[in-house]
Length: 384
Image 1 (spheres, one colour):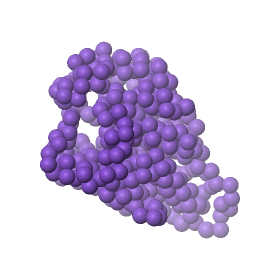
Image 2 (cartoon, helix red, strand yellow; image 1 turned 180 degrees about the vertical axis):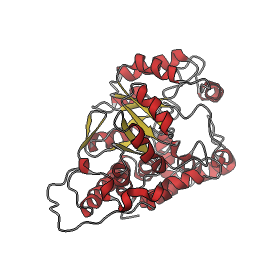
Image 3 (cartoon, one colour; image 1 turned 120 degrees about the vertical axis):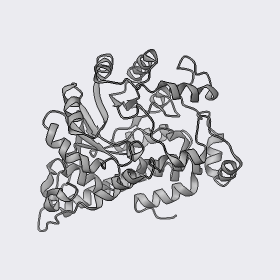
């Protein structure tokens, strides 16, 4: 593909170049995938008001997220197994985000470790934390994130239990992956990916293997992981983590106004309206659909961010217009990474930036910090 003009171009290229089990892991939802689809389709119902004869010189997309200056109010979302979309994927994505001036969020379930990413970047990145039963391991993870100078902790609250994803079951995605004949044949048709993986030592969960007490290799990882997600997670645990972290704290997975009020009361710096990309509760509301009510409930008390279904700069603008102060992209940057490595992540960010800038101009605005519901037809009530 000689010309990459949109995120869909990157998606198609990634599908060609990434082995099926890892592409499907990134590009799927739970059960019927109705929420996964709604995350995207609900954006399409929100229409803009086009304005004319407005001075559009000196436009600016610069903003802040949790007090950190950003070149546009967009962050790379935490995504597990990023390093299986492309060799050393987390390092490449973090570098691209740093050079572009937007935050990169490293997942607990990353292939490259916290230390790996810190060694290959020059500016602080964010770290996403899952709550495990092994509190000693959680404390060590937090200390490792501090040592790596991570500037924000993103605490995910919606993964006490794991949603069933049919494609992962059919593909035999596990730790380690099941190398069936079908999977081996599929991988053999992805020579670029295979060569990249042969050239790196990073092929396992770098934050866990060798750091969790009973996990010394990939063979012991699956049993440990299946037992570790904490069913008793509560707001007391959020306070415990907040005290031990001591820095900027962002709570991810808020989809209900009452939970948003509890998040604001917790003293966190921001919350992320997110349904885990449609990978957890199928049949839940789309993230963009849940956003307005949460902004109305707590937007004056806590910074509200949004994640899920974003496939363009226009989607970013829609979310900002409905009150989000920051928007996360997960699958779009994974498509770029799988398609073209670090260069693909940069291309993804360029596309998002250009689409956001041009759409804002068509709506008659010069500064992204001036965006509000007035740029939307009917003030965005199409998803209410």
